[in-house]
Length: 147
Ligand code: DQA
Image 1 (cartoon, rainbow, N blue to C red):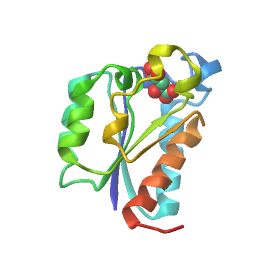
Image 2: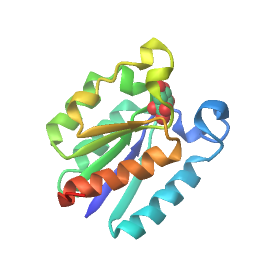
Image 3: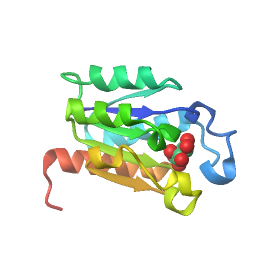
C-alpha cells in the first residue's frame, strides 16, 4: 500500500506556532514519526505540506493511480474549503481527516469541517498521535481488518 499524508497551511511552522495548542514537535519530527509508523505497518508513505489550496488540490488529484488512501490535516482550509471537500469526493480514495488539536473544544468557527462528509473518519485532539492513529486507521480500513 502507498499512502499520501497531506499537511495544509501553517503546519510548516509547527514547533514555533502556538506550542500550547499544537505542541513542540516540528513538521519534520512528525514526518519522521509517520515514516517510522509506516515501516511498522509495512506501507509506503509520501508526505507533502503546502500553504496553497491549489497545490493541495493538485496533490489530491495526482494521488489517483499513485496512492490507495490519504491522511489529511487540512489546517484552516478544513473550515473554509468546499474545493478540498470536492477534490476528496472526486478522487474517491479512502481519506482520514486528522487534527492535532481538538477542534470541537476551540472557537466556534473550528467546529465545522467542510471535508468531514467526504472522509471515512476523523481523529482530532491527540497531537502527533492523531496522525499516527489516522495512518493506522486508514491501513486497517484499506485491509478491511475486523479488529
Ligand atoms: C488544525 C486545526 C485547525 O483549526 C487550524 O486552523 C490548524 C490546525 C489542527 O491540526 O489542530 O491550522 O487543523
